[in-house]
Amino acid sequence: MTRLRYLSLALCLVVVHVVLASPVGTSVPDTRTAEEAAQRSKLEKAQRLVADGKATDAIALIDQVLAYYSAKYPEGKTRWYVSRTAEESIVYMGYATVESKLAPGKSNARSLMVAWADAYFLKGYALNELSRPADAKGALERAVYLSPENATYLIELAEAYKLERDWQECDRLYREAEAAAEFSPPAQKLADRSQAKRGQAFVLVEQGKLDQAQNLLEECLKLNAMDARAKKELEYIAELRQRKKQP
Image (cartoon, rainbow, N blue to C red; front, side, top):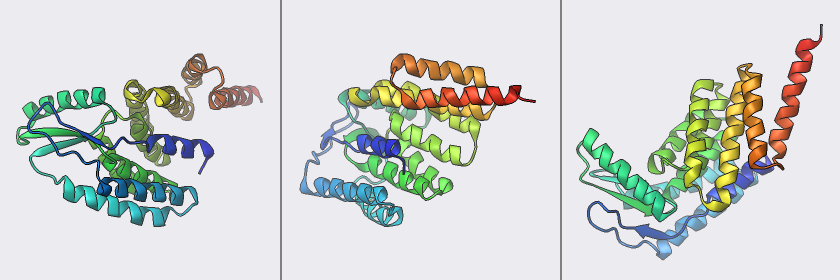
């Protein structure tokens, strides 16, 4: 695992132990309990296992956490969301209103601040580390379903499609991640936005669209003049152009 990918993982797994009552339906009991703390403790242990190259062991632990949340928040008439802030929760309740009109059936929606979506994210991350993109996509799609505006989840899902060289879907997810970075915590907003732009640039390079890729990478440097990865990618583009000139 690269140091940057591990840092991205560590930043994402910061979840507040609170449950927000949604504007729709009845309130949800507070889950700031020993049980919730235990789930976070398991995920922190799983995170360390992934960092140590023991992704398979980590997945077994993550599955215990997922089983806990599946039992506590069962599928049914409630549409569950997981948010990081009150503002994000309000956005999800707006989505729930639209969803209920398009597909009636769920009587209410709830936005939680628990580690449920992080568990799916970490499982997908571990599966990507094992080069199992098809399996990773399933877990990461669940994370995105719970937290549609989490840029870090969208970026990791794009990584799974990158492993499969599905450039169209990869680009779509990076674009969504760039927009979703608006909802990222302040300390993570720049990193998410920059990573999403670099991801789009990577796809463009793979497609041979070097000018467009260069423009995106230069935008990254406008956001952060110290973006070493953007600089490295620009150097790579210059090398590709130089090779094309050689007979």
